[in-house]
Image (cartoon, rainbow, N blue to C red):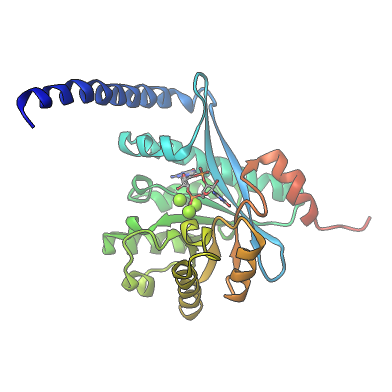
Length: 283
Ligand code: C2E
Ligand code: MG
Ligand code: MG
Ligand code: MG
């Protein structure tokens, strides 16, 4: 490369980078107002118990309906929310909204199920997180056993902080799941020592479990390990019956995926899934 070539490269790439930073900043500013403008909503995806085929839970997933851009995927805006710190207030809204929804469904007489809520790194590192969640639960009147908090392996890097935080959360009575299990920094040490309840096998392993023998080996190993460690195990991203059958053979406890349902709005979730679970009280 001579200087001229480099000059061409610089002219070609710098504007693109500036655009990206500018766009990011715009999105961040829009996000600041999104909460008060009611642009966020939650969708729910059922979690199915493989033995009984009953719905035992639902994962709450955040959606942002941007006034100009339309629906923006959480994988696009959560990282920006995380970096700017906005995730703390957005995450609190998610916690409150999901818990309130769950309580309202219980009040309506549906069979109680657990709601899984994703926590981001910044949220998880808040020293008063357990206190905040405890206050939300008692305000709403929801029992802690109907809440499952999903964290990722990367959040468990600092062993001491993680252990203390998880212990405080467990004292509240909520469940703790490790999301996207197998994709992060895996240490068997924390699986042995951390007070967790469940592993969620990342959907990248489930996707090709029938075609790729390495994926099959990984899913089988994670499931077996979970059994030995007396942890529950959920498979994410189940899209077809072959995958489901494989997971059953491996004695995976629960599954989640498009085979059962995409994440859907509360009202649709209630109509499609909760009505079937309603406890019939004879009059
Ligand atoms: P996640 O927690 O692992 O959530 C599962 C993702 O897999 C969801 O994507 C869901 O729509 C998708 N999924 C479920 N079943 C299938 C399937 O069968 N096939 C395929 N291809 N995909 C499936 P979504 O809703 O786009 O969320 C992406 C990620 O964004 C989540 O991954 C989670 O890490 C994050 N996220 C979503 N909502 C929140 C939130 O409220 N707070 C935080 N901190 N993160 C969130
Ligand atoms: Mg999750
Ligand atoms: Mg997650
Ligand atoms: Mg996941």
